[in-house]
Length: 438
Image (cartoon, rainbow, N blue to C red):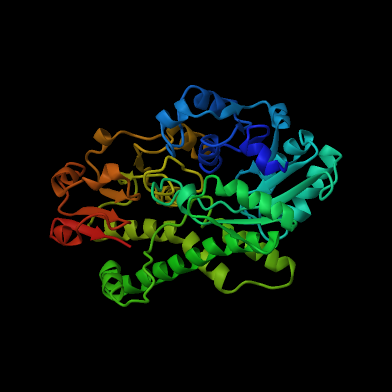
């Protein structure tokens, strides 16, 4: 009997190493079909899961309360499983070089608890070669086992979109790969248990690694193009959104929008690819130029706000500014690598200490990572300017009557930056508003 059959019959378990925005939904999905051990080093997070609380908002408290996942912070529990999925983040350092610390650490812990006959599948986004050249040696060293003989490896890049209730694990085609045909077949069949959309069998682990890293790089470049167009059209006094809506009537026009590119995927993955290219003697031109544009958008927004204040005869230093939204994307509590912090810090260079409001964000995380303490919606009063930075559902219902209450009544013009274009622009093209959007 092979490993897949044993897993299906409940004779062997599957483990998830890393229970964040990606790993936890995967664990929950598999637990509907097979026995699952969910491991994470964060004991506080594990306690929340055990108490039926979903801090990520990815599946909800009710689902967590009723799942059969065996949540644990005890790494020795991994010895009970033979099919392991590693879903830890792969961030970048301050100099934009890959930070493989999380995936190396996960490999170390897993290696210390690896048993013969296991299959290890990595989901973390990496540059081609990391799984075989970085992770395997760690697994072998820590376990004393030989890859290809005592255990096998595979790679299946995550495509879960945090905060997205439509494009989920079950509905997105899953790329799978394995070190040999037998491993590939096992990995494919295991994922087919939960992925309704089916799997795509990549011809090698490196091909699967490369496919993932270019998916987000392509999106990053397209958004960078939109951001550059936005800067050009502002100089021409043309509304970018109106231009894109017109151009979007052509069947093959790619419908991307300008915006802040943060998070732990699109704003990070391209650096993994360009890092490996540099190692091989190739200096990226298109990818890195797109990254530079997107990395500078927070500064561009802040500078545009300052110019708007000056145009409205409002003193810049100590101006009262409210920022609505702090997460890296809408309806998601995750603040890691948010680009809203760039706006916040750049305004600080002008002597402005913005008030930040985000009812959807992880307030504790924002305080720990950035030193930012959130205010409440009712605290937005007597403002000189307001920035709607994130398209949370909580902000969608904001109408002109409510927004009027945010401002200092003495101002002749209310400075309003609508980064995501949430509002009806025509409604604010009036003498009492200076409205700006990307």
